[in-house]
Length: 119
Image 1 (tube, rainbow, N blue to C red):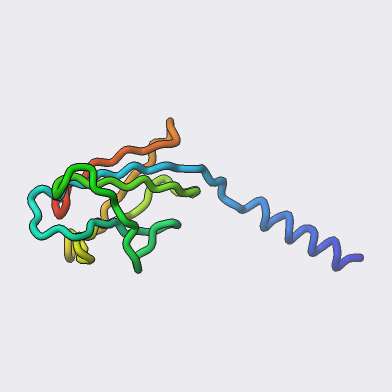
Image 2: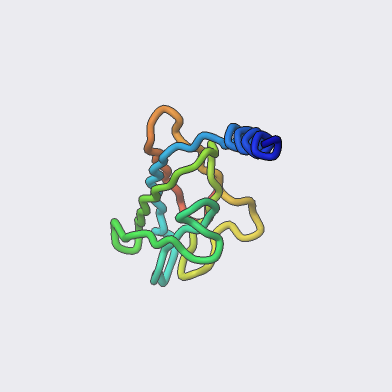
């Protein structure tokens, strides 16, 4: 009986420590108009569905100029970190990842980037 009460108490304490999560939609556009030989544009980052191992594909909006990704996730964090890729190569080599701060007033965050240029 005492063991059951302890297990119940531990379960309650662990459950109360869970961070609240929110559904987020992040619309990322990236301008690649200054780049050459564009075959594929993607984005990598932390938090599902992104990863640092494989590209999340971006769709061409304007040929060889503008690409877009719509990322849907659920997170308790206020920001995520990303880097864009061009033909499988990371932008901003030897520089910090980009931080995308989520819009806390709306469920959708809009981000406009220029490939390989810090803002």
